[in-house]
Image 1 (cartoon, helix red, strand yellow):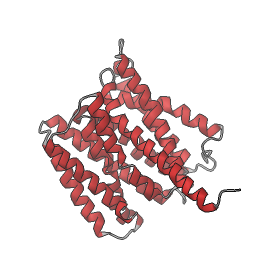
Image 2 (cartoon, one colour):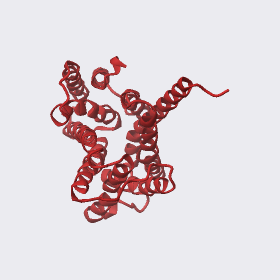
Image 3 (cartoon, helix red, strand yellow):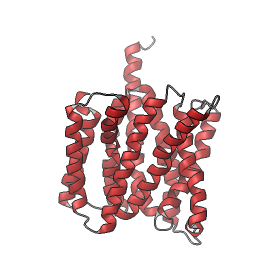
Image 4 (tube, one colour):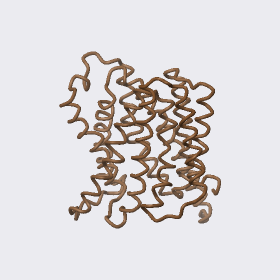
Length: 306
């Protein structure tokens, strides 16, 4: 007896959502892992080393056919320019801002503010994709801003406020990356594997060269903390590679909207791991702000409609 199409669909849904949930947990764990890696490595050094290690993993999986092969034929100037823009927004600029934010504001606050890219993408889709302005998007933006203000209210020192600003900048970059990827992917044949590799090139080897020139001593400290090294490797094998691959596998099985809803687990995962690993806890007013941010992201993602 063969499974019916509905059985296949239900099973694919369960598998796809499970992949998204695991990816969200791994993404969340990356923030406290970054805080631990900062004991021995610089913020930009962490990104450069982790993504440089993750790059051959993704290229290898594409070469053996476990991932769709990137379409590199006909990589003319217009296509290449857009690929560079996407790799800058979703790669170099995003990861650099995130790691600096963790260094200044801590993993828990960064873990809640950075996923605001969902709200940023919903807003930017109006002018760039011609999408209709939904009242829910405006409400989500207002709630998210209120949550960010409350979350930042418990960290009045300048460094922490700059960290919140960096996390917001990272969210804006990634939101713009999502919208432009939607706009350009089909027209310029920018497939997911090709864009992922380009992102890792920007986050990894290019940033590695920058750090070698800027501060070579921070890349390979003489006596690194073993916990920092383990944290760095977990980022390389976790959020920089495995989580991205799981996310791609999820989107192939279930609608992107359902996947993005499950990714709301990311800041929750980050808060739990940060509390356990680095004792980074939120004050009561910050918990209210974190809850507002989750509500704002949920509204912007259309979770209620699904």
